[in-house]
Image (tube, rainbow over all chains, first blue to last red; front, side, top):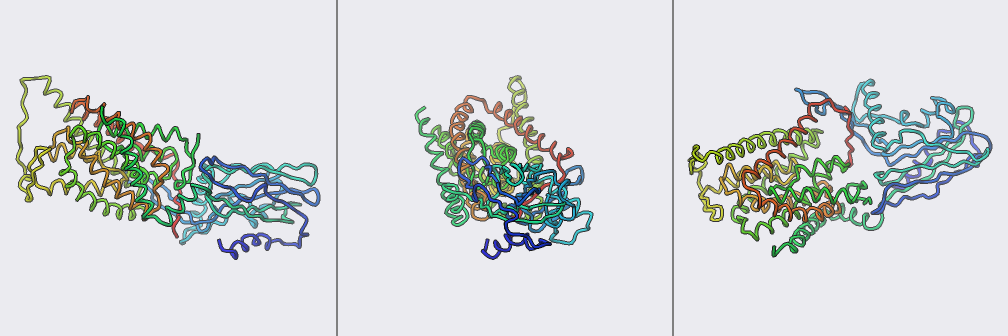
Length: 247
Length: 306
């Protein structure tokens, strides 16, 4: 991620704000800005906390790094279920979770939710090739459902709890198989069904230690990595047969 | 206890991986097949991405086969000359097969191609082996029954480049094992397996090798074909998870040793009948999956490369 892209990503959502917002209307932060994937990684929890300038609702959106996603639909061809039709969506988040102080429908107008892409259904689904609009909707819904089942799009919104009128906190859970890369956490301040303030904060998910070294080696020196993998397997096979030699 | 697999990018239970390796290793030792045709689908089932499952299985097959070959070699049950003749074709075939794999993957049909290959090949082979072993069994029950002809002369015996394979007591054209190696090499790269379950019956029925020599010789050539696939996959697709492969191996090499001892206690036709049964079960399961209405009509394919 280049610094410029990161800056655009960080500031982008704020550019949509319709009215001038006091900078301190909402202050929020994460308990940590990095998740380290180690050998024993089984998922992570992160605390989001902050304060508002008075009674209001708060919504937080966590997005993973974006990439193109192709979704295939199976159909029965000559008695066999085979991939038949596909749509490729550009720049879909690899992870998507929403936390809110109350159910989204109660606190946010559909227009605002769409504008700020709050809720998995409000993501921007842009096919790479021209597809009929009804197909786009069908495949987009299927994509969201499949990602939810895979745990990459959180199936339900998590709860943001207020302590009094101004302080809030929420726990955001990440599954064991989250993709690595630069994540973005957007926190929206909501009053009268509209977004009146916001803040974004980055979150980096990366491999560390032995796993990072193995991954980098496998991608940087792939031929050497493959050869070493084979040599190690041969050694393991030979070693294992030793105790049985004389029997 | 969970362990994070750096290339697969998922966490898996270490006991499950070790147990899976041991089970596959045992089968590998008994039948002289690599077990990839069971390992790959099982890895996918527990949540390893298919591409990583295919490539890492190949990596673990290298180790499991080395262990198996050493065990058979100590009993003098490896025909090195035959093994390397098979390998000549096998290496060429696996290079062609990886090319085909990439082509089908780009078309989004690789999973279907893999499943269809499994169903057809496993179904036919399992059926043939089952029939054959039952016939042999019945013939032995009736001592007065028709005896098999010692040597049947076919077009295969008219091919050039006749070579003597002393250990296998064969005098056949070298083109036969080279061609067999090539065919198995292509299929094994496309299906992501060592190809032992194709190789073993072909060696028995097509080449006419003695059953005792088959597992060791088959494993010998699997070592090299699997090593070739591992390096090609690591180089072109970055899908070899060495941590996963090593965990499978630790269980697998031990399982293979016990499997080899168990296998030598069984008679040839019993071995063939058991293998036929196993092959048919896998084929039936895969055929069912292809024709049943899938639980989910949609599937995601992530484009990691842009």
